[in-house]
Image (cartoon, rainbow over all chains, first blue to last red; front, side):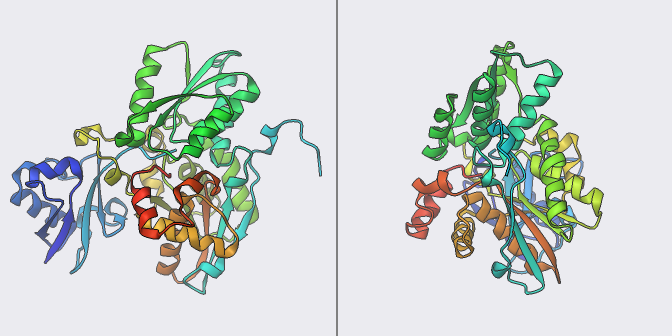
Length: 92
Length: 315
């Protein structure tokens, strides 16, 4: 099923400047694979060649970091939103 | 009541208060630990004192020396207070987009401020401070993001206080910045009761930091990686500025005037309370609302405040 994927500023040039795109899949991993297939410039940027999330990327399903759900196997349903954000230093 | 010999003795032992009237679930109690009661006004007083005393004990900090620290405000303010009382010079690398009150408080305690680009957020402050530390090997670089004395302050202080005051705790919720609070309190509570869940709340920082050149400029606090943060956390949830401000306002219903990151943490606690059958959620309020009055968070139109919050570091 198609879900909205929000891209961070740093990745938008690889998706024609789009802030939000749609991609299909029944898990977060499938959605990200579909994303990389549609925008080859994104390939390897979010999910590495080893099949795991890039170290400095956080992927959220709605509001939750998927690393603390079932990572790339986390199921997605209609109306879910996937957000990709760079891991940056938090304020302190 | 004892008379204290130094303000530094007033750090820690903060009160915890029941705010369950804000809980969306009648079977879940929510309690807030008010770290704004520390003398420097935030939870970071604990971290500042812990790091300075550890450096003194390790012999890497001597009287008259200069300290350097990247901080979006609170750690800098806590360090500035400790440094003033202990006779150290302090240089704080501060992102340009923090509230003016944070900057003024640093000046109150005599810290020297070096600005880093606001578009790079705390990432930029960390990067600049590391470069300055390399140029000034004679300075003491405590580096809260990599200093184990940061989480230790919470392992020996904040955590045991929560367990003492609320041993029925089932869920612990706190904001994620350096990860010091979550690592220290989380580890302590899980050692007392392995069933306690630890939830991290963060602002969409990666969305607000638009000065990143590539993903490889990303950052994970070394303490988070070195101390098993990913294994310790049970959940990590993002709270957007609008929700943070709304919950900061809701806190005034129970008489709590807290900073905007407390609104975010409470929004996370409410999310947690909605998702469980029953329990006791303890949430950390990192600071009071005083430093955010200029943002109009309580008094201006919500959409105006939200826009302002999107370009201001409030964690």
